[in-house]
Image 1 (cartoon, one colour):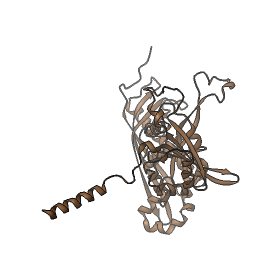
Image 2 (cartoon, rainbow, N blue to C red; image 1 turned 135 degrees about the vertical axis):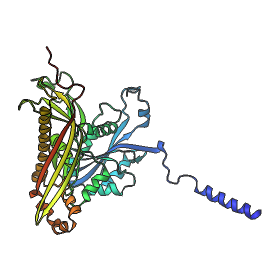
Image 3 (cartoon, rainbow, N blue to C red; image 1 turned 135 degrees about the horizontal axis):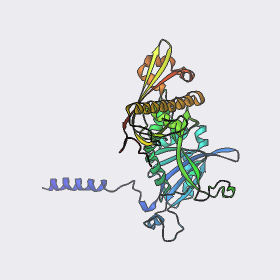
Image 4 (cartoon, rainbow, N blue to C red; image 1 turned 90 degrees about the vertical axis):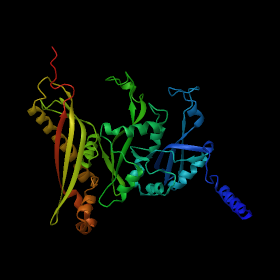
Length: 407
């Protein structure tokens, strides 16, 4: 009996020694970041890292009313803090000079990279991110046109927090299929994958004109619009450095080419050449990139299949006849092909960046051949032949067939 009692006492003592959280961080002692920005700046002739973060002020956030306002009408739920250092890690640690609490960045879901830093190369900041135990790999990566600091200074239009607003915009992008969204994990994988160059979403500041401010000839209203942020286009990287931007339409073509287009509208000229009179609303699309090697000749075929509905018809001529539907399908296929070829032409000839991942697909299909040409792929890539084939189908015409003629 005494031996059993001693055994139980030892077990209880061991269990008590395991209780508690030795690494706990009390929430009331933390400064929680919601969105992080990083820039390169020059100070006194030396390049420095600039780290910025929007930090939540719990007291002011809690005092927000049901419509987003608060009792005082002046305090904001976040405060922007920034610091400078010789390295990104030092700059991040220097934030402590501005904060009465310990910074907590695991809550951040948006990471903005400034344009200058992106052009210099993102390898160092990606190294910092991947080494950090606090930054989540599903955090969204955005590249700013200009400084990331300027993005973080912008006030949200619809949400209480800028991070909430940007997060909502990111999640809403499949509706238009004009922005390529990517998180840290996939972005880092793109950077290290052989035969693949990286891309990321582009975020920029624009001046939102209020009603009456954009009247023609009213030059006195310049600069009076409220600033807001939007996603538009794609940042293209070559060897980890920002090479340039794809605009909205080129991004749409890129998404079709890699099979990432989900929804979106394609305006077509069906009845007249100089008038967009039909809106083809894409509901489903797929893509297959097939490499071909014949001797030393390399070529690729991109097969795209798209389905959609007739969303709008700006004419009273018949649209539901089989021959007209066939013409709509051919026009849609031609338009999608042109979008893909425009994006491909810019990537190959202007940026020389393999954002479609042709080299990676060649590596997987012909591994032995890839070993022979891998070192020369950068020189080979701009001259490879790519054939784009598109098949488009109209599945539905909506609740009506032909457009009714109004008397």
